[in-house]
Length: 243
Image (cartoon, rainbow, N blue to C red; front, side, top):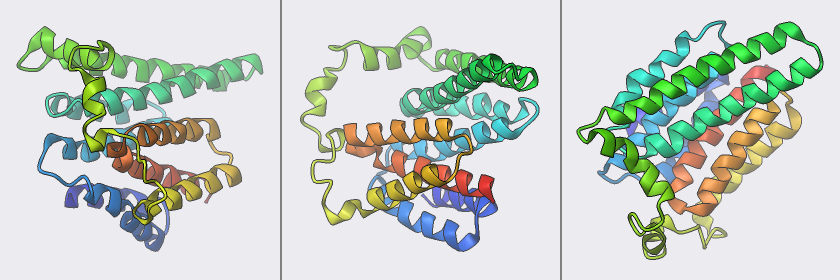
C-alpha cells in the first residue's frame, strides 16, 4: 500500500506542484484503502501505475525504450492477477487506438512527418502489446493459463460470472453512489472534466481513458481504486502539459 502511494506521489509531484500532488494522493487514498485486503488484487495498483508511466513516457519519447518495462514487469503481473488482462491490455489498447486515429487524421491533412511519427508509435506499441499477450503462456499452466482470462471474460458459463456478480457486493455497481463515502469520485471526476474542458492536449486520448475508468467503476464498485488512480494520472498529465 505504501509503495502504491509512493509511486503516485513521486510521479505526480514531478508533473505538478507538490502540494497539489499531495492533495491528489490524499483523495486517492480513500478508494484504495477500501481495497486494502491481503489478496493478489492489491498488486494491480502498482503494476497499473508502471504501465501508465511507461505509456505516457513513450508518448513523449523518440523511441520505444520506455515500453520495455511493460514486458519486464508484465511477466510478474500475468502470474499474479487477471487484472493484467483487464487493465493492462485495455490500457494499451486505448493508446493504440489513439495513435491510429491520430495517424489517420494527420495523413488526411497531409502532415506527413506527424503521420509517420504516429504510425511509428502505433507499430512500436503494437509490437509490445503482442509480446505482452504472449506472456500469458509463461505461467505454471501453459496454454490453459493463456486461455484462462479469455474464458473468464468471454465464456458465459465458465465461472458462472453473471451469477457470482449478482451475489458479491464488490462486483456490483455502486448503488449508493450518492453516499458521502464516494466524495472522491465526484472530486476527481469534476477535476478531470474541468481539465478536459480547459486543456486541449491529447484531449481525445484522455477522454477515452476517463470514459473507460468511469464505465469500469459504474459497472463494478471494486474498480473504484482503478478509477481514482487513472484519474489522478490524467489530471497530473494535463496540468503538466499545459504548464
